Image 1 (cartoon, helix red, strand yellow):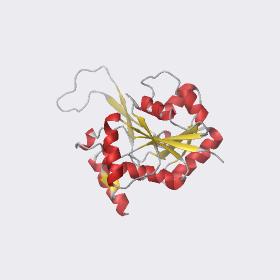
Image 2: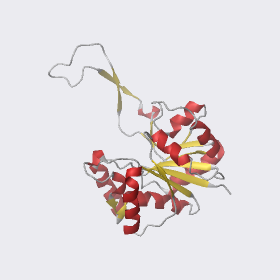
Image 3: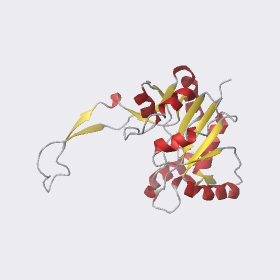
Image 4: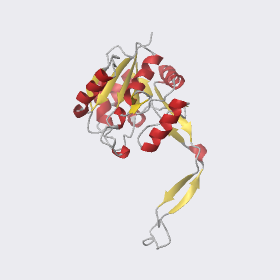
Amino acid sequence: MTSKAVIIVAGGKGLRMGGDIPKQFLPMGGKPILMHTIDRFLQYDEEMQVVLVLPASQQDYWRSLCEQYDFHQPYALANGGETRFHSVKNGLALVAPDVTLIGVHDGVRPFVSIETIRACYDEAARTEAVIPVTDVVETLRHIVPTESSAPSEHSACSDSSETVPRSDYKLVQTPQVFSASLLRQAYHQPYTDFFTDDASVVERFGHSVTLVPGNRENIKITTPFDMTIADALLRG
């Protein structure tokens, strides 16, 4: 039987929410967002190891929330790092040595579907590196820098732009799931600004990434507008 783990990264300060409470702790549907996220993975596999990554300064508050909401799901707790790369690396150190598949998920994506989680882990068992994606539904334009002078009073930008075919692009979600040995080796690389997610770390290590369909509801809650959408999804 394949042994699975998920590293849930929740290091946000919630600045775009405009409040004092980090977004992962905001109440939604009767409990904090982060609790919904953890529950979703344990609904998929109740034996999965959960490693939660939080800034050290937020951990006491999280523990108080767990008491307040009677939340006693099992998890290991790692300290957040300077960047997402360092946070995931800290989480990796707590993953059990017998785990063979490791997912990395954003703590503020509570609406990932069980089907998406299953597809990512199932495909990772075959190809070792998987990310869920969705189609781009808006028209995309590529900004082309020019050497022209400053914009006139009637123009918003001095750069030109061009439409690009949206079928050539995908929107990336989490969980991003990898074989444990591959992910551990990839995270031995020195950090660079190129590392925007776990797939970029694995690709820089030299391994290709497989795409599987995600679910549109799997939004990343970072703004008040996202909370409005989240409330609608809960009601729906």
